[in-house]
Image (cartoon, rainbow, N blue to C red; front, side, top):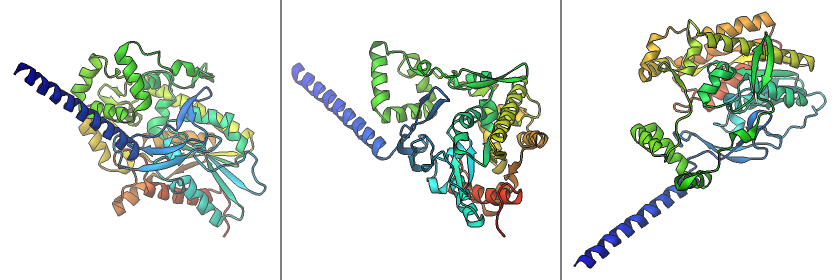
Length: 413
């Protein structure tokens, strides 16, 4: 009788383990077939900390909402998310180089739907000369890395116009070494700092070896390392646990199954990026703006020295465009209600600075607000927060008109 019960118990356990294994295999297959996690498109880079992998291709998805978009992305041989371009500019061609972060990288939409492609198509319809718009945008870059990219790569394309796509809610923070290091939990890229009023490059060349994790110790660490390298579902499951099962995540971190949270994205109960709208800035934010302005002024000097012209596009932020967005943030982070905010402040600072420097500024916030109010159509992906196809289309159309109106390109009658 006892042996019979033991056999039945072992059979139940065995079938349970087999069922669990089959479930995990099915979930792994689903994660790969349904593209629940982005394919690798970035790699460590001693010039920039990280960069696109030349000739890479794969699916880009929102890991938190895989059904929101699934874009097949190709990176060209020079590491641009664009078609192939020779450094040498074809005779009679007007070239525009776009610098920016994820909004310029536009991984969330097909290449032909990206705003710089829309811009190129429209300008070729109205200009008497061929126009090439080259995207140098890279997901996560701040103005510091954009300056470095122009200095090391961008100038080689001989652009007539360099268009800096400025994103206030990320760029200013990312330009400040101390705040961004706390935000990201580590130094992960080169930075520019102001020393005696002079812009100085630090952490360059970037020691990419420092980004590598130490060899795993113990069985749990070795299993985690193997899963991280070979399993797609492992990353998706970890993300779900962190975001939806916070208490369980804490337990798993305590016993070493999950890695500790290194990033510090909240300060005083307020998302750090929200401080860019504060009426009164903490000293570090004043420093961040000073570094930002120095970087852009240096970029302008280098573009001018190479025979080109710099213009700055102020990207409309979702908090400024969607009337209910800030209320949602306050509901999620009640401490934001205690912070006096001015949503136009970053735009105002940039307008005044660029006017002093004589750098053309392109702003499309009013048009984005009007379009959203009159049509009720979303211009940003609800969960991801980047422009959707409609947002890119509107930006490309507005930008084409603004470039012609300001004489930055010469359109035919």
